Image (tube, rainbow, N blue to C red):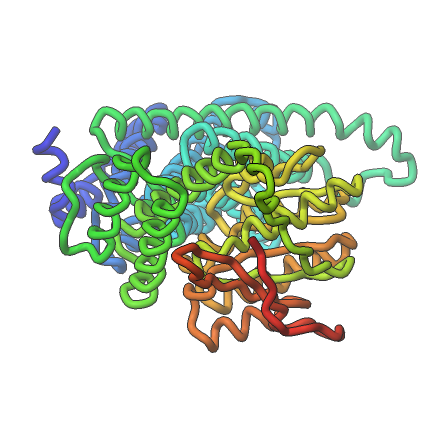
Length: 533
């Protein structure tokens, strides 16, 4: 096993294996067409190894050639001459197409969606060369057909690329199979029937005529594609499990690394990873203030390293460890909240009540910004708790909504747990707003800001703000201001209706949180600092 892992580090050996497999697969498909599946299996195995080719141009070339061969084998099996339409109702050609799509999905799952799209895009030339699944007649119709089949393959790539594990990838493959099945069903109907000869004036009769073949094509496509993609992804997960490798996915692509391996000191994130490992090991010894201080320092280092160094192999690990540390700290804070305060002695002062909080106007979208440990998250959850007391529908959108719900208090809250992909987050927010929440607490920026450029973030926040406004909801976002430069902070602040700035002050050896209204569009406000606990 160690020998194998060492071999994968030699990009020239991997390149040689890939280039040898291409003529081997083509020769096998030409000499023994009945073994086309074996040819495609050779291509699939070679495609997994291309990720170890480090030169981008060579990698792209390998994926193009392998994608062409895979879809060429599928196209030859799918080609049906005119007058032989009965052959269309067969699972075997669909299964071969499923294998080609599964290989494209596997490339995306193993090496990122860009490479998966390169692999699937080569299918366009292959379908045109083989005349693809349809003998469509004219070149214009054949080109449209080939483009739609390629688009169906793109669906599998995009659905598989950001899956965090095999379970989610299988679910995505099922969704992609439905989308592709609709495309395939419509295209095969074009082969069976001349559009100009269909009678659109009698819709019930037309529906009865088209439904049976469409349903047959749809289900054959869905079952074969889902089966092929599912087998490919499960086999891949089994192999990396046996090799003792862990797969991670993030904005920088897909990473494979040994869990628990010695930290690479050349990686700029390695000292931070080591500190976080000690944090987890000693967590039971900390109180809330100690844990908050250590985590604040670690997150500040993460943001500064991200600005200076950008991507590195351990960046995703460090980010995920910080998310886990935040979750643990949040749980520690909740436990502290549950401890009842001792009854005051006779004549002693009563416990200080929490000061009145700033009222967020209805329909406003507000950013709570401040340093780590300034309790801005608790402030946002307190606001949510007040809305719950009024009987309003509320939602928490974050990576740990269940724990944040504990802090917000009693009441029914819509919990929306998001993944780390910005596109999935946007979709989750859209679905959450469909349920009509009146107040939304959003805590996602601590992951998105260090992992995306300012232009991407601005577009995401602008689009999200429009969705929230259209839904008529009030929303509160939370962000650490140290994560961005003053210029970037100003850009992000301009996307919100109001800005509440938080700070921490030391009085008598005790930390106190305070806040002020930094900005509020079209509203008079008092900019004086206010106490918050």
